[in-house]
Length: 306
Image 1 (spheres, one colour):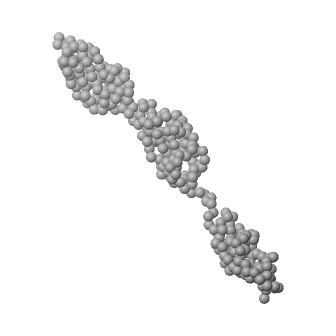
Image 2: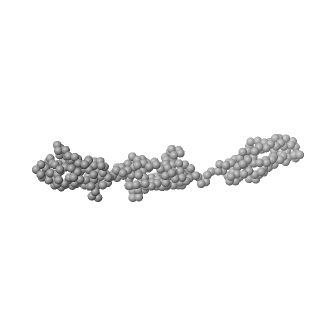
Image 3: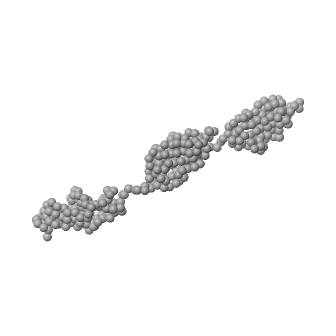
């Protein structure tokens, strides 16, 4: 008797880990058992199997636990198998290799997952656990979590190092949260295993030079001294600011008279016998204005003030 057919085929690759192992004999035989049919791995270790035989179809079925992936197995049938006349089977063996079933992963993250104070100029570099295909700007994207919008970026992949580079086209928004999105249906290894999609988020640093949004304090001790029927002298104590007061805006009756860096201002060409309302606002280099402080003054009808 000979083996007329068997599965998996000799030298088959990418064999499923649960693939059936069968042998079909050319004629009815006896002696088919786990003693006469064995399965060993590439290290020569015998696999635990059970063997059943259907005399009607002359097929032996080798039941086995799941094979290990990427492993070469050899099935051997011995001369203990014989036909009714006592003719023994010529010892036969064939081999096959199981498939790679491990999904690729992202094995390295730069910056690390949940990092904080990440540079706004960061170039992101995830590394895959094995070579993959399908890496592009369509399958790897950077998302601003706070806005829900994708961040424009270029995506490159080095198959030798298995490293991706994600380069945003501009600085990332300060004090914002970001995540990297992978399309697990597009990225796969040579065996066709799809990427196991990771979770990867980080937070960008606060603005190292935040805009000044603090207004100066309101001036104090604002005094309007009537010098004549045509002139009023304004004085006040200097205001304070977190960075520095640049100057003061002087208003008369709601209209801007001018600006002064000192804490005083003389208003001339006034009219006799008229009441005026003056306002002082301190301002800083960022344009922040203090609360206005008002003071009224009335010029005498004629001549110097008494």
